[in-house]
Image 1: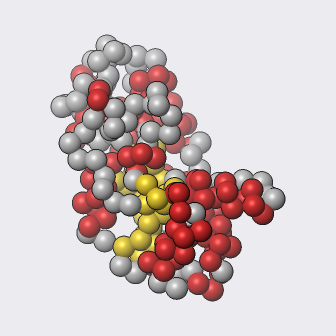
Image 2 (image 1 turned 180 degrees about the horizontal axis):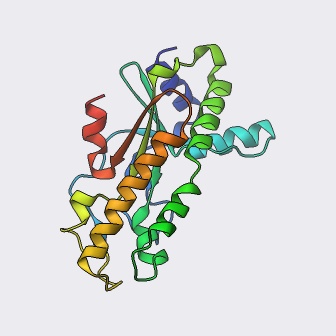
Length: 211
């Protein structure tokens, strides 16, 4: 099966699951994301993806098995099957850094995400849904980690930390550390030889277009 055929096959079984990363970034009404007026961005994603968390939960329930770990979304482009994991660091910054830059807390938070487990179990679930011999080979699978912070966008321009009363250099340090930690974790922890990309959420569509 081609990547598009796989996407459509899954979509046809779980028709209510097509969405965008912006809507997946706002799982609960009180969680701030790019759809909220306070944080609204000028470039919300238009790329359709499938809610793979929802698909995995429904699949496991139907099979009578424990819910597996999964990436947030699945999509495709040309010959590539794309798995997408979304991490909302702005909420972590706002509520968990206690008014101070703390590299250890950022690294500890990233380690909890277990990116390798998410992609391995997502591929396994996908294989079970469509049949193992229909999956693309590893070099036709892309794993995109989407984060909602960026040193370039937030370090100097955005005032997302206004309620924390952080110093400007602390703000820049936080965003630089998140960039560094997430990139290192993605590249080192994911063992499967697939293509891996870390993307700022507002650049997701541009990155997708370039695949």
